[in-house]
Length: 115
Length: 114
Image (spheres, one colour):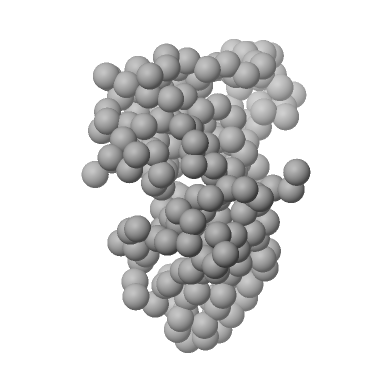
């Protein structure tokens, strides 16, 4: 059974710092990996999706990398801002589902950016 | 265009009652997913639909849970004889059936069973 772990569970840093959130998964036979953010009381917003054949994806100040063989992904946030405060979730989709299957989520990293 | 919508946004019900949760996917998205988010449990995948069919219902927590999708669009998740442990946020997502299956989530329905 696929298990997804996110480290750290919580992180508080001053505004302007660069930071890295970590995600690891036990089954490397994944179809793709998706990073989301969740604001309190809200649904999930998709940030980046990395296909299994890709090594990284970038969107603005966000960069996500994928090392499928070691079962790891990182989300890099550059020049953090208070508006980045949220819970960040990593999720993987297994290859066996052919893409059309549910995601397995980590428990998230609760990020606070101090003004 | 409009995103995924869910109704109601909040539902408080008494133990033993049945509840029905609704999800309207993004127009044109053929795949639809239901998840449950409980305090301390994280996000749990329940079921997905490709068109109107659900190939695998094994993720549903018990036989009190059922889901259907009609017309390849709206889906309903029904919980019969609700229990307090059913209290959670129920999230719906949809995706195109393309190479990425990137999922887009609705705001969720917060269910409280008293």
